[in-house]
Each structure stands twice: as structure tokens, then as C-alpha cells.
Image (tube, rainbow, N blue to C red):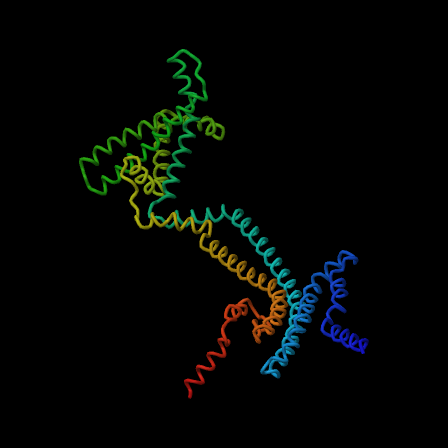
Length: 412
């Protein structure tokens, strides 16, 4: 009799403690301490957490079955127990699928980051390489669209520079001999040319200034001023013809003599040719660009400023900067990239957290079924928002049930 009693007791304890028959083997297999390194990591990632959840569910099921004796709604309670085990099985499947989904998100995220990095480098290189061309294009638009004759000013100064350079080399021997005879010393030709070029630059520029003033006087029909400026212009003509253009014509005489037999020309012929050259150069340069560039240069020198549209000038630098660097497009691209990184980062975190949380939620549901006769989590967990119901677990009914009950009461 005692043997039968002990046998029945052993069978009862074996049934009640049935997880002891397999939990060590399951844990040893999932831990995989003796397996190769790659197999050990794979088993621990894919099997360890499901095995732990399964063993916990098995142990909690024992007191859950014993408590059926004291439950009022035994049928619903047993169905809830079966539903909890079904949720555990689904959670294990969702866990494995979630790991694959997480790997997919990692690959997509890395490819997206590489794409952003490559496009960012290409954008920087494109900006750096194309910046000179954009700068030239923007500067060209600014120059051509400006109310200030910048091209005429540039051409006037450039022509004055060319004319001063030519006359510097033409008159260098005469000036060098004159200064050497006066001082009795050998003068450094480089220093002398620098000073002579500076002097001639202002002389040529002054001749255009006198011509501009003479034209303005004619437009204003101021007779007294016309006579005075005409006298000054005549003096300027004589000075440039005698000291500059005459030397220029003298330098061309050997070229004329090379192609003409018995070529002879007197001082009057030289002065006449020099005067025609002066009129030709001044007329061409004046009507082409100097008539527009010289008044602007004089306004700057006199401190009157450049007469231009104030609003246009103030908005030009901002427009130029935007065209060179494409600030708006660049900031918009950065904002879009940041939004993409944030969005994909949230998806990656959710894909990483949901699979293990799915298993933990199913295991916790076993405990809450035993204690509170209801589940804490609604499985499967589709997103992180599904976890919010855990905070309302202490309520006697779920929010959906409460809303449904209120709607039915209002309908009645």
C-alpha cells in the first residue's frame, strides 16, 4: 500500500514538475557552449530567448492548472490558457520573422547611408568644381543687368592702361636721355619706367576727363564754359601730340622708309599725322566705351558716388550668394536627409526591439493570467504603440471594451 501511494505521489510530482524533464536539455542546446563559434551565436540569438519563454510558460502553467479548481469561469479560463500558449507560439514565429526583418532594415539603412554619403561627396565636389563657373556666370549677370556701366568703366581703364604702356616704352629713350643730362647720372631704367608709366596713366585718364567735361558743356550749351574747356582741350591735344604721339610716329618712320624709296617727311607732316592719330584714337575709344565709363570714373574720384538703384544694389549680393552656393537647395537637402535618417532610425529601433518584446510579452501574459485572470498585452505587437496598453493594465476593462460599453449604454 505504501509502495502504491509513493508511486502515485511520484507520478503526481512528475506531472506537476514536468518542465524538469526537458529544461536542462533545452537550455544546454540553446546555450550551445560546446558548438562552433558561429553555431553558438546563431543558437543563442534564435533559440535562447524562445526556450526561456517556453520554460517560463511551462512552469507558470502548473499553478494555473491547479487554480482551475477555484475559478468560477473555468471554461473561459481554460480557453484563455490555450490562447496564451497559442500567442506564445505566434510570438516565437514573429520573433524569428522579426530578426529577418531587422536584418533587412539594417541592410536598407546601410545602403541608404552609403548612398547619402556618396551623393554628399559628389555634391560637395560638384559645388567646389562648378563654383568658379557659377561665380563668373553670376558676376556676368550682375554686370550686364546693373545700371552702372561696369563694362565701359573696365574698358576705359584697360585702354588707358594699354595706351600708357605703349607711350612708356616709346618715350623711355627721350626721358632717359633728358633726365641723365639734367642729373649727370645713370638712372635706373626700371624705376624710371614705373614713374613714367604712373605719370602717363594719369595724363591719358585726364585727357578723357577733359573730353567728358567738354561734351557735357556742349550738352548744357554753356558758351563760356565751352570756350574755356575748348582751350584746355587744345592744350591737352598739343601736349599729347608733341610729347607722346609725335614720338609714336617717329618710331614708325623707319617702317615707312623700308617700303618707300626716298621717303622724307618734315616736322609738319609728323605733327599732322600725330594729330590725326590722336583724333582717330580718341574718337573710336570715346564713342565705343569712354563716353560711358569716364563719367562714372569721375564721379568716383570726385566722391559723388555711383548713381544706381538702391534696392537693386542691396539685393544683388544676396542673390549672387544664393546663385553661387545654392543655399536654399543645400539646406533643403540636408533637412530631407535628416528626416530620412530619423524616420529610418525609428523603424530600425522598432524592428530591433519588437521581436524580443514579443516573446517577453507572451511570457508575461502567462503570469498575469494566473494572477489577474487577464492578459497584459494584446498580441501580436505591431508597433511600439501597442505597448501603451500595459500602463492601463490595472483597469478592470480594456479601453476598447469601456468605449463599447458606453456606446451600448447610450444606444439603450
